[in-house]
Image (cartoon, rainbow, N blue to C red; front, top):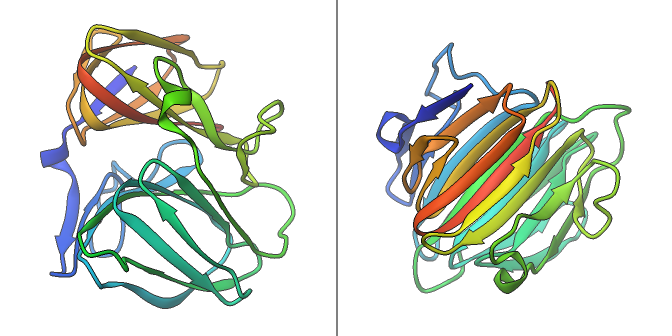
Length: 233
């Protein structure tokens, strides 16, 4: 089953400094049919104006993954962490028992991000934060795991949940495949380009909610940058 959610069908709000699109119910956008997908709870497509950002605010009990599409995001938190994550790279904040953080676009141009929240599992732990570069060349024509709480993904940023976040760059005409385990949920969005996934067309910004599909076969009709979440129920 693949349910395509077109970019134009997403909820959202434009706050001036922030133009946000929501794949799932978030803030003032509420759709009972889009409350999450497996353990995936939030997927926001955010455009943040230059010199603005999210002021300090608290979180707990959530794995928050930020995939930077354009520009860069600068992070500060109550643990004393500070860092800048550039386009194509990823940061992870495990909110755990509680953390305050701020995310700012200190760049001279707009920054675009995917903000992905996944529900943690297991024992509550102290919060943590980390970032790392993921060269796009390494994911050319294949999926690379960017963040994971699953066995065997040791090079990825750690998250505290039975899920992984993957990225792939696919040239027009190329095909990549991903095997989805039994009972797993997947959600995929092209950050750029357009693709066909198991016979369904996805354009830039569209979401695909996937389950009961053993193999995902994805062919790019235009050069594409893909982000995929594979999670437990």
